[in-house]
Length: 129
Length: 129
DNA sequence: TCTTGACCTTCCAGTAACTGGAACCCCTAT
DNA sequence: ATAGGGGTTCCAGTTACTGGAAGGTCAAGA
Image: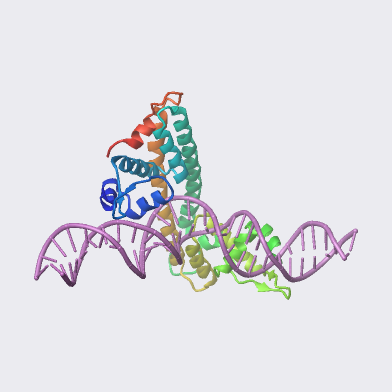
């Protein structure tokens, strides 16, 4: 199967699929004309990667997940550990974003938003430490 | 004032301060020996930038905020608009992250995390669409 | 057969916001 | 004189792609 069909099947952009080959996540065969020729296994891997990425796993984590997926003697504890580490990163990010959101929305509420120059948002940003 | 003192005062890394000059956010004077010589105004701007960045404003938004800050005939509505756009981005990101968190934490709960290979996390990632 | 258009290929550059490091200059104290 | 702790510039690397240029391939229609 050619790359644009694979892109349709997996929902990944063509460029992304080529990129995943570049960094060694997949290794599709080549036809005589030089075109990539994707097997079912390649397509499975790409779909797997797409789902892992959509859960926010980084490329390195995806590599690890793929390796575990292909390792039939894996321990589920290893998968769980990877996932928990990623969950901790998400939680960290969430708490930072919530903090930002709270501060920012408070500032926005106190700003009149009219044609006068006085603005508590700028005043806060400019305030001495 | 030299750059490392400014770094201490503003909490920004030296490299970041140089970078902010590179991209035109600040324009400190130079001493005879070529060293950057920071005025109070430079330091204020850097502190302002540090706080705006800590609220998650991107560099371009910071540029806009700084311009508004220096424009004494600004309308607070313009500041509020910038802040509201940024808030919307944060909310977008938050909802994506919450979605990821929900899915991932559910998967983690269902994984035994033992030395057996069967793992619902991998099963989900590998599932057909 | 020729052409046209839609494929495919590789390679290079750019994105956001820094960060690390190399190579080198300057200043002060011993 | 030298050692250290500043400072300077410039280049490369980070994440995960994305856009674009230049060019090869293939199938269909005139």
